[in-house]
Image (cartoon, rainbow, N blue to C red; front, top):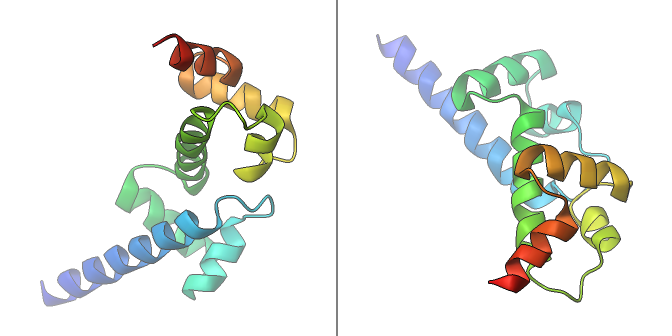
Length: 119
């Protein structure tokens, strides 16, 4: 039981470190599983399975959710163009960002912004 507790703490530590790293680096378009695993000091396959067990999401699902939440925050400011927001959150391609945003939110970034302005 002691071994389980310490490995659980280690998993928790890995996930906390990963979340901190993601919060700081999600805007990088070259963000990768390998880079985050290297930063934490574990193999990418080990990290991938720990992260999925600990969060119920793959790293990419989690990263995309973080990026979409930041996009929603940035969309509140009408000064930012959609292209700028996409680039700011780690998407080189604004049309791909729009597609991902719509898959997660059910509307395009432009429609989302219009809804915000209407309220």
